[in-house]
Image (cartoon, rainbow, N blue to C red):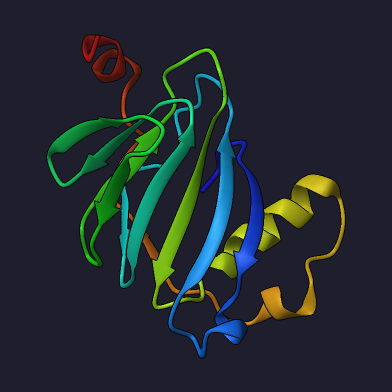
Length: 141
């Protein structure tokens, strides 16, 4: 993930026996988001503020506050913020482990070392293609 994302880990693998993690993410305005990818864990995205576009498989869905998007393990997916305001969402990962990557990215953005728990292994992510193209986002209306 190379987009400019602000993350706060709220619940870690070590706190749930590896079952689930919870991360609050803020996606900057007009962010292309991560490239299309897949991995061996489920992700549920609950939008708190703003609007996000999700691609899951070949489907594109727009989600606003109070709405959920779900990417089951193994499904190709990506997200983007096409609006001029930040978007904020809660990310639930099961099983847990990927929260460590978000903690590493947050530490790098701050210019600090990640916490020791974030240095444990992170589940693999397989890149599959580019982020959701701008022209596709613009056609959604």
